[in-house]
Length: 379
Image (cartoon, rainbow, N blue to C red; front, side, top):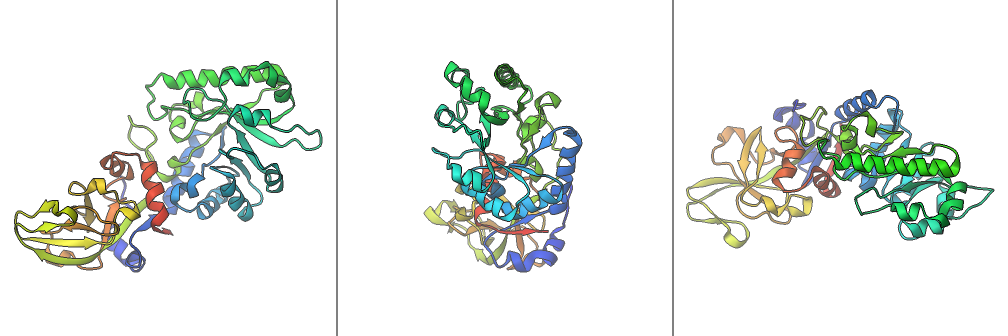
């Protein structure tokens, strides 16, 4: 991973903000733009529609969307209707697609805010209104194998729906890949062929070719045949590795920091934290840092994880508390560490993908969790 800031530079630029909050998420705008340009280059003739659901993965949907719009992007996917309205109130001249509108469509809201919903089940399709005066645009989600959301082929191809499908203003048929991060998985091809089969069926009904979309960030790395007419990257903009089998060509966008609250000398045979789960085998110097599980710093890392202080690794000792954790700094030089120093959780010395692996999870979950409770700084 290419470094952007040294520990000394972090101290100088952001330390006053870091010291005001339990956790601070630094968001590198230039690296985000680099990743966007990388996507523009490989997806030249395909519409790129960023996914900004869950508050842009916890980074702040309004600010992140503003960056995307300044890059010329104008199509966006959100998770629900409330997210869509929030974005629409700020940005009037973009297209907003809602991945999950819930049980019932509020057609008045869809019209008022000019929103395009995704139809995810047979009930939504059955209840979709047809009006010669105002055909509400929509997308239809085809379940090609995830068994999560979307119409199965039987419901979609039901004779009862032919007339409705013919009259509907369908912008895209979409689906979602289950194994896109593994280019060797044959299930990717199976899903792609299923979606194309439904596209052919719909063309037979409507007489025109409806556009399709199947790729999220990882799907883009499967190659051009998966680009179709529109791709839906989210994590790739943020530098998360889209492929489990290949090096990451993207730049890191996010770094999570906290700071040292207190240092102390602790003696041999004393214990650290709740449950006295860690026993010191020698006289040690410990640092209490201002982050815990309420900030998305998982208890799974208790006694096994580590952080970085001045670019040097420090082991977590004892159980992680709600908003505090303890690390061992015995081997640090006295002059190299002091109360108030920034503490890196992930970013420069450890990628978010590696941090997610330590937590036995994925980078998406880490971002969403830490983004909720961290001060966010775009620089």
